[in-house]
Amino acid sequence: MRLKNIKGAKEQINLSPYIIQNPEEYKGKFKTLFKKNNPIHLEIGMGKGDFIINMAIKYPEINFIGIEKFDSVILRATQKLEKLNLPNLKLIRFDATEIENIFDKEITSLYLNFSDPWPKNRHEDRRLTSIKFLKRYDNIFKNNPHIIQKTDNRHLFEYSLKTFTDYEYKIKTISLNLHQDDIENVQTEYEKKFVAQGLPIYMVEVEK
Image 1: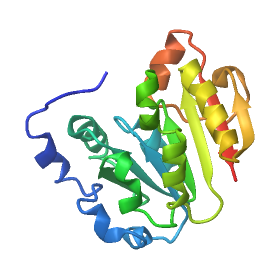
Image 2 (image 1 turned 135 degrees about the vertical axis):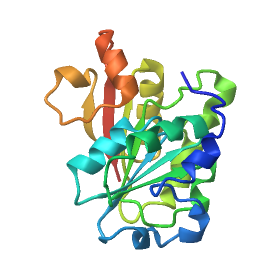
Image 3 (image 1 turned 180 degrees about the vertical axis):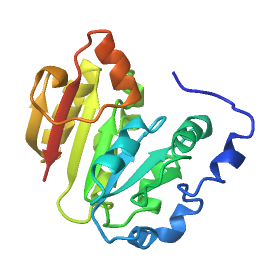
């Protein structure tokens, strides 16, 4: 469930040194925001930040950017970061439908974790694994496109497998129950809840 309408959330977010306030200005040159010119991995829909923060801690040789469109949600991530020093992490308050306006051939890997499934057919284009979005991603990848998706929603997972293969992605890794397979994994806050409930987590890694 999304947090809503935390008073002063936008102002608090902008005080965080992790927030990129004018991301359009860095299009094609996001590497200048990091101390080291390492590969950039992007998470769309980072929620409260558990995944992207722990990834940045675990992999200091990789630069990470998290995108979230809700002020009250990304605020929770900035609060978790207050006592941390992670020079390889930046956050952006942005809508993924405009992803091409801020990145240009500079992302190495993309994470789509527990994205909104948008179950109604009329909302198909809003799914982050729709063909419409896969075409957008073409413009943000530096080299060969590489996407890792995790979801608890079987229908979204099946849909994504079809769109990935239709768009000529090749499946590199797949799991129908991630936490029963021997696959390296960093959990999200949603994932922890689903696993505690005994629900399977679906995962696929694809590339071109």
